[in-house]
Amino acid sequence: MKKIFLILSIAISFVINAQAKNGGTTDGAFTTLMLSTTDVERYVETLKSNTAAFKATGATDAGVCITRSGNEYDGQMMVWSAFPSIQAALEGSLKYDPQKAPHSFARLRDAKYGVTWKPLKPFRLDPGYERVQRVVISGNKLQEFITAMTAFEEAVIDAGNDFFVGVFVPLGGGTHEAKTLMVRAITPDAASHGKIFDDYFDGNAPWASEWAALQAVGYEVISDNFEECEQTYSAN
Image (cartoon, rainbow, N blue to C red):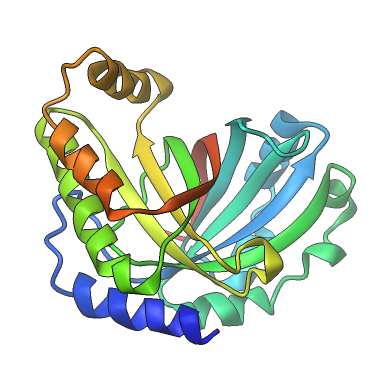
Protein backbone atom coordinates (compact mmCIF):
# COMPACT_ATOMS: atom_id res chain seq x y z
CA MET A 1 0.00 0.00 0.00
CA LYS A 2 2.85 2.40 0.83
CA LYS A 3 4.31 1.69 -2.60
CA ILE A 4 1.01 2.59 -4.29
CA PHE A 5 0.77 5.91 -2.42
CA LEU A 6 4.40 6.65 -3.32
CA ILE A 7 3.63 6.00 -6.99
CA LEU A 8 0.60 8.28 -6.79
CA SER A 9 2.46 11.14 -5.10
CA ILE A 10 5.37 11.02 -7.55
CA ALA A 11 3.11 10.78 -10.59
CA ILE A 12 0.62 13.46 -9.59
CA SER A 13 3.40 15.94 -8.83
CA PHE A 14 4.58 15.45 -12.41
CA VAL A 15 1.41 15.21 -14.47
CA ILE A 16 -0.23 18.34 -13.04
CA ASN A 17 1.96 20.34 -15.41
CA ALA A 18 1.98 17.86 -18.29
CA GLN A 19 1.18 19.20 -21.76
CA ALA A 20 -1.73 17.11 -23.03
CA LYS A 21 -1.17 16.93 -26.77
CA ASN A 22 -3.52 13.94 -26.78
CA GLY A 23 -6.42 16.13 -25.60
CA GLY A 24 -6.67 14.31 -22.30
CA THR A 25 -6.74 15.06 -18.59
CA THR A 26 -5.66 13.41 -15.35
CA ASP A 27 -8.98 14.34 -13.73
CA GLY A 28 -11.40 11.64 -12.62
CA ALA A 29 -11.16 7.89 -12.15
CA PHE A 30 -12.46 4.66 -13.63
CA THR A 31 -13.81 1.39 -12.28
CA THR A 32 -13.74 -1.90 -14.14
CA LEU A 33 -15.55 -5.18 -13.58
CA MET A 34 -13.60 -8.05 -15.08
CA LEU A 35 -15.81 -10.91 -16.22
CA SER A 36 -16.34 -13.81 -18.58
CA THR A 37 -19.46 -14.25 -20.66
CA THR A 38 -20.93 -17.10 -22.65
CA ASP A 39 -22.36 -14.71 -25.25
CA VAL A 40 -20.44 -11.46 -25.73
CA GLU A 41 -22.81 -9.85 -28.23
CA ARG A 42 -25.92 -10.65 -26.22
CA TYR A 43 -24.36 -9.40 -22.99
CA VAL A 44 -23.32 -6.10 -24.59
CA GLU A 45 -26.81 -5.61 -26.02
CA THR A 46 -28.27 -6.29 -22.56
CA LEU A 47 -26.02 -3.60 -21.09
CA LYS A 48 -27.09 -1.12 -23.74
CA SER A 49 -30.77 -1.72 -23.07
CA ASN A 50 -30.53 -1.68 -19.26
CA THR A 51 -28.55 1.26 -17.87
CA ALA A 52 -30.00 1.24 -14.35
CA ALA A 53 -26.75 0.07 -12.76
CA PHE A 54 -24.73 2.90 -14.32
CA LYS A 55 -27.30 5.46 -13.23
CA ALA A 56 -27.33 4.03 -9.70
CA THR A 57 -23.56 4.30 -9.29
CA GLY A 58 -23.41 7.87 -10.62
CA ALA A 59 -21.11 7.02 -13.53
CA THR A 60 -20.72 9.80 -16.09
CA ASP A 61 -19.90 7.34 -18.88
CA ALA A 62 -19.60 3.59 -19.23
CA GLY A 63 -18.86 0.88 -21.75
CA VAL A 64 -17.17 -2.41 -22.46
CA CYS A 65 -13.83 -3.77 -23.61
CA ILE A 66 -13.79 -7.20 -25.26
CA THR A 67 -10.49 -9.09 -25.25
CA ARG A 68 -9.65 -10.02 -28.85
CA SER A 69 -6.24 -11.63 -28.33
CA GLY A 70 -4.13 -12.72 -25.39
CA ASN A 71 -7.20 -14.11 -23.62
CA GLU A 72 -6.67 -15.68 -20.22
CA TYR A 73 -10.09 -17.37 -20.35
CA ASP A 74 -13.02 -17.80 -22.74
CA GLY A 75 -15.37 -14.84 -23.11
CA GLN A 76 -12.95 -12.44 -21.42
CA MET A 77 -14.14 -8.84 -21.26
CA MET A 78 -14.69 -5.99 -18.85
CA VAL A 79 -17.28 -3.33 -18.10
CA TRP A 80 -15.82 0.11 -17.38
CA SER A 81 -17.34 3.17 -15.74
CA ALA A 82 -15.99 6.73 -15.59
CA PHE A 83 -16.36 9.03 -12.57
CA PRO A 84 -15.36 12.64 -11.84
CA SER A 85 -13.14 11.62 -8.89
CA ILE A 86 -11.79 8.66 -6.94
CA GLN A 87 -14.23 9.57 -4.18
CA ALA A 88 -17.16 9.29 -6.58
CA ALA A 89 -15.84 6.00 -7.94
CA LEU A 90 -15.48 4.41 -4.51
CA GLU A 91 -18.87 5.65 -3.36
CA GLY A 92 -20.43 4.44 -6.60
CA SER A 93 -19.00 0.96 -6.16
CA LEU A 94 -21.03 0.60 -2.96
CA LYS A 95 -24.28 1.31 -4.79
CA TYR A 96 -24.16 -1.76 -7.05
CA ASP A 97 -23.27 -5.34 -6.12
CA PRO A 98 -22.43 -7.38 -9.25
CA GLN A 99 -23.13 -10.56 -7.29
CA LYS A 100 -26.75 -9.41 -6.90
CA ALA A 101 -27.30 -8.46 -10.52
CA PRO A 102 -30.68 -9.09 -12.20
CA HIS A 103 -31.08 -12.53 -13.74
CA SER A 104 -30.90 -11.03 -17.24
CA PHE A 105 -27.26 -10.10 -16.49
CA ALA A 106 -26.23 -12.87 -14.12
CA ARG A 107 -27.17 -15.70 -16.46
CA LEU A 108 -24.88 -14.33 -19.16
CA ARG A 109 -21.69 -13.71 -17.23
CA ASP A 110 -19.37 -14.69 -14.39
CA ALA A 111 -18.01 -11.67 -12.50
CA LYS A 112 -14.30 -12.08 -11.64
CA TYR A 113 -13.21 -8.95 -9.74
CA GLY A 114 -13.51 -5.18 -9.68
CA VAL A 115 -10.87 -2.46 -9.45
CA THR A 116 -10.62 1.34 -9.42
CA TRP A 117 -8.09 3.13 -11.66
CA LYS A 118 -6.47 6.58 -11.53
CA PRO A 119 -4.80 7.99 -14.67
CA LEU A 120 -1.18 9.02 -14.08
CA LYS A 121 -0.83 10.96 -17.34
CA PRO A 122 -3.38 12.88 -19.44
CA PHE A 123 -5.95 10.52 -20.91
CA ARG A 124 -9.01 11.17 -23.05
CA LEU A 125 -12.12 9.03 -23.04
CA ASP A 126 -12.29 7.85 -26.64
CA PRO A 127 -12.59 4.04 -26.77
CA GLY A 128 -11.21 2.12 -29.73
CA TYR A 129 -8.83 -0.69 -30.54
CA GLU A 130 -6.49 -0.91 -27.56
CA ARG A 131 -3.26 -2.69 -26.75
CA VAL A 132 -3.37 -3.30 -23.01
CA GLN A 133 -0.28 -4.19 -21.02
CA ARG A 134 0.29 -4.73 -17.32
CA VAL A 135 3.80 -3.53 -16.45
CA VAL A 136 6.02 -3.50 -13.40
CA ILE A 137 8.23 -0.46 -12.86
CA SER A 138 10.10 0.66 -9.77
CA GLY A 139 8.80 3.78 -8.04
CA ASN A 140 12.02 5.73 -8.58
CA LYS A 141 11.66 5.27 -12.35
CA LEU A 142 8.00 6.17 -12.63
CA GLN A 143 8.47 9.84 -13.53
CA GLU A 144 11.07 8.88 -16.13
CA PHE A 145 8.67 6.27 -17.52
CA ILE A 146 5.79 8.74 -17.82
CA THR A 147 8.07 11.35 -19.42
CA ALA A 148 9.34 8.83 -21.97
CA MET A 149 5.84 7.48 -22.63
CA THR A 150 4.53 11.01 -23.24
CA ALA A 151 7.42 11.77 -25.63
CA PHE A 152 6.74 8.52 -27.52
CA GLU A 153 3.00 9.24 -27.69
CA GLU A 154 3.55 12.77 -29.00
CA ALA A 155 6.03 11.55 -31.62
CA VAL A 156 3.52 8.98 -32.91
CA ILE A 157 0.84 11.69 -33.02
CA ASP A 158 3.20 14.06 -34.85
CA ALA A 159 3.72 11.35 -37.48
CA GLY A 160 0.05 11.69 -38.39
CA ASN A 161 -1.52 8.93 -36.31
CA ASP A 162 -4.72 9.13 -34.24
CA PHE A 163 -3.10 7.60 -31.19
CA PHE A 164 -2.91 8.13 -27.44
CA VAL A 165 -1.74 6.29 -24.34
CA GLY A 166 -3.12 5.99 -20.84
CA VAL A 167 -1.13 4.90 -17.78
CA PHE A 168 -3.20 3.90 -14.76
CA VAL A 169 -2.50 2.89 -11.17
CA PRO A 170 -4.91 0.32 -9.64
CA LEU A 171 -6.66 0.83 -6.32
CA GLY A 172 -8.32 -2.09 -4.57
CA GLY A 173 -7.63 -4.69 -7.26
CA GLY A 174 -6.71 -7.52 -4.93
CA THR A 175 -3.83 -9.82 -5.85
CA HIS A 176 -4.72 -9.47 -9.55
CA GLU A 177 -3.50 -5.87 -9.88
CA ALA A 178 -1.38 -5.33 -6.76
CA LYS A 179 2.06 -5.00 -8.37
CA THR A 180 1.41 -3.58 -11.83
CA LEU A 181 0.39 -0.46 -13.72
CA MET A 182 -1.95 -0.67 -16.70
CA VAL A 183 -0.86 0.88 -20.01
CA ARG A 184 -3.48 1.33 -22.74
CA ALA A 185 -2.30 2.35 -26.25
CA ILE A 186 -5.36 3.35 -28.27
CA THR A 187 -6.25 3.91 -31.93
CA PRO A 188 -9.70 4.19 -33.55
CA ASP A 189 -9.57 0.70 -35.08
CA ALA A 190 -7.40 -2.35 -35.73
CA ALA A 191 -6.23 -1.05 -39.12
CA SER A 192 -4.84 2.13 -37.55
CA HIS A 193 -3.05 0.14 -34.88
CA GLY A 194 -1.63 -2.29 -37.41
CA LYS A 195 -0.27 0.56 -39.55
CA ILE A 196 1.75 1.87 -36.61
CA PHE A 197 3.34 -1.57 -36.14
CA ASP A 198 4.01 -1.88 -39.89
CA ASP A 199 5.68 1.54 -39.97
CA TYR A 200 8.03 0.44 -37.20
CA PHE A 201 8.94 -2.97 -38.60
CA ASP A 202 9.35 -1.54 -42.12
CA GLY A 203 11.79 1.06 -40.80
CA ASN A 204 9.42 3.94 -41.60
CA ALA A 205 8.68 5.15 -38.07
CA PRO A 206 9.98 8.66 -37.35
CA TRP A 207 9.22 7.96 -33.68
CA ALA A 208 11.62 4.99 -33.44
CA SER A 209 14.10 6.88 -31.26
CA GLU A 210 11.38 7.83 -28.78
CA TRP A 211 10.32 4.18 -28.63
CA ALA A 212 13.92 3.13 -27.97
CA ALA A 213 14.20 5.73 -25.21
CA LEU A 214 11.03 4.36 -23.59
CA GLN A 215 12.40 0.82 -23.65
CA ALA A 216 15.67 2.06 -22.14
CA VAL A 217 13.83 3.21 -19.00
CA GLY A 218 13.47 -0.42 -18.03
CA TYR A 219 10.17 -2.08 -17.14
CA GLU A 220 8.73 -5.58 -17.18
CA VAL A 221 5.65 -6.52 -19.19
CA ILE A 222 3.51 -9.00 -17.25
CA SER A 223 0.62 -9.37 -19.71
CA ASP A 224 -0.20 -8.16 -23.23
CA ASN A 225 -3.68 -8.10 -24.81
CA PHE A 226 -5.64 -6.46 -27.59
CA GLU A 227 -9.11 -5.22 -26.64
CA GLU A 228 -11.93 -3.76 -28.68
CA CYS A 229 -13.68 -1.11 -26.61
CA GLU A 230 -16.84 0.96 -27.01
CA GLN A 231 -18.94 3.36 -24.98
CA THR A 232 -22.44 2.13 -24.24
CA TYR A 233 -23.72 4.74 -21.77
CA SER A 234 -23.49 8.47 -21.08
CA ALA A 235 -25.23 10.37 -18.30
CA ASN A 236 -25.43 13.47 -20.53
